Length: 196
Image 1 (cartoon, helix red, strand yellow):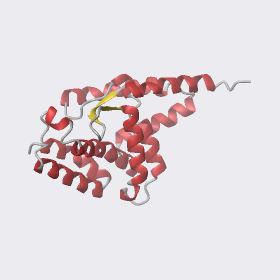
Image 2 (cartoon, one colour):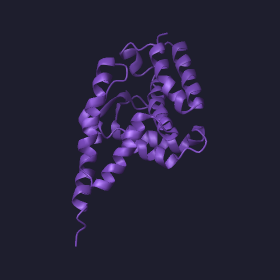
Image 3 (cartoon, rainbow, N blue to C red):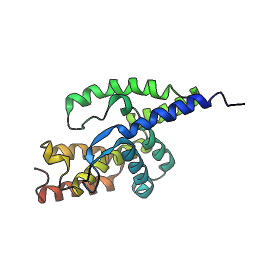
Image 4 (tube, rainbow, N blue to C red):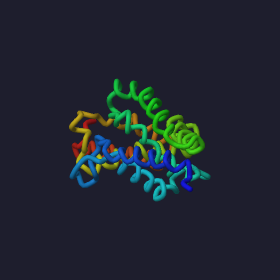
C-alpha cells in the first residue's frame, strides 16, 4: 500500500525543482552566466560545511545547512530580489511570506511546519545558526563579484559604501568572514571594480 503522505511529498519535490529556473543577479565565478537559485542554495550550504569553523562556538552546522537549503524556496513565487533595490526589498517581505505559506503548505503538516520554521528562523536571524546562515548568504555574492572584476556592481553602479552596509550582516554572523568581506571590498575598490 502506498504511503498516503507520498503524493504530497512528490508534489513538493516537483514544485521545488522550479528553483532551478529562478535566475539571480550574480554570475558564476567564471563569469560565463548568471547563477540560478538552486545553485546558490547548494553553494552556500557547502560554504557552511567548509567555513563552519568561523561560526560562533557551538553553532549547529547541520541546522545551518538545512536553513540554507530552504532559504530561497520562496523565490519560486516571489522571484529574486536585488539587494540594492530598496523598493523591491520593501515589497519582498510580504511576497515571500505568502510564498512560504503556499510552498511549505504543500507538504504533510509536520514536514511543512518543520521546514517553515527553518525558513522563519533564517529570516528572523535570532539564533547563531540563522545569523551564520545569513552571513554566508550575503558573503557569497561579494566573493563572486570580487572574483568577476566587480560582476554586477559596476553594471548597477553600486558603491563600496552600499556593499559595506551589507557586510554588517556578515559581521553579525561571523566576525572573521565580515573582516574578509571588508578586505574584498577594499581590494575591489583598489582594482577599480567597485566605486568608493
